[in-house]
Amino acid sequence: MRVLLLGGTTEASALAMALKGNGIEAIFSYAGRTNVPMAQPVETRVGGFGGIAGLKNYLRDARISHVVDATHPFAATMGWNAHSACAGCNVPLLRLERPAWRAKTADRWIHVPTIAAACDALPNIPARVFLAIGRMHVDQFAACPDHHYLLRLVDPPVAAIDLPDHTVVLARGPFDVAGDIALMQAHNITHIVAKNAGGSGAVAKIEAARKLGLQVIMIDRPHRPKTEKAAEIDTVLHWLHHSAERGV
Ligand SMILES: NC(=O)c1ccc[n+]([C@@H]2O[C@H](COP(=O)([O-])OP(=O)(O)OC[C@H]3O[C@@H](n4cnc5c(N)ncnc54)[C@H](OP(=O)(O)O)[C@@H]3O)[C@@H](O)[C@H]2O)c1
Image 1 (spheres, protein in one colour):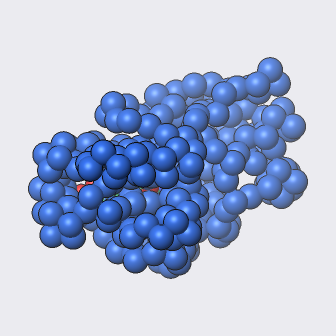
Image 2 (cartoon, protein in one colour; image 1 turned 135 degrees about the horizontal axis):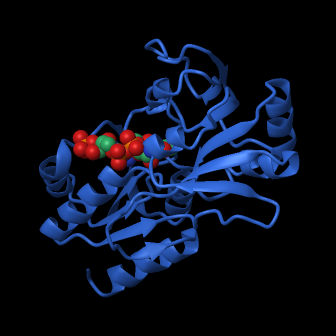
């Protein structure tokens, strides 16, 4: 058995640990979005495969027997590519995915389908917005230049951020509620824009918003292929052992 683990999430790192602990040979794959990706206890590769065709070649060349897609819920392109490539190469694929967050009674969420819609959902008067969506898509908020934006990033931005009024804070999660309350109070935040990532690593800001009574503009998850799914590491291990027993 030789597993390709598509990573970039807390769950992927936890699974890498479990695979190592169970003596299962695995290759951890990072897209290469951060300068210093977290070290993994298994063999690691970095960078795109070159679309579906590139991934198919990789699966064959690296003699991959199973793929676990543990990419972020918003990394949909990789999910679709893995789905097509695995089907094309007859390699079993499992999606490891944390359940989405659900609003609780005290939450003030506005659900939006896309980042552009989140921008449209901001108020007409200037607000102080915690833009908790990573670096990749922040420039889309240049369409709403009247607000102050707080950005929390893993790495210092390489290119200038195209927002007239913003502050960058550098930090790597997981975060805690007390820290996020302090951060939001220090920056007089009135609104939060977040992706519905689910899981525990990024939920502190949502709980902090609930405690502070702040409005959250929640970007719902993109459409992904219908792939067999697991929410827990143990389920992945069971799936691997089970398919190995069946000789898949
Ligand atoms: N999107 C988010 O909000 C978010 C948040 C936290 C972490 N991440 C992580 O950051 C990575 C990139 O996210 P994204 O939204 O740009 O993904 P994406 O839109 O689904 O992927 C874009 C391209 O990046 C490459 N790629 C993505 N994940 C990869 C992986 N694990 N290993 C090798 N190549 C990968 C693939 O390139 P090729 O077509 O060349 O193979 C893919 O077509 C993902 O691994 C994801 O888990 C994303």
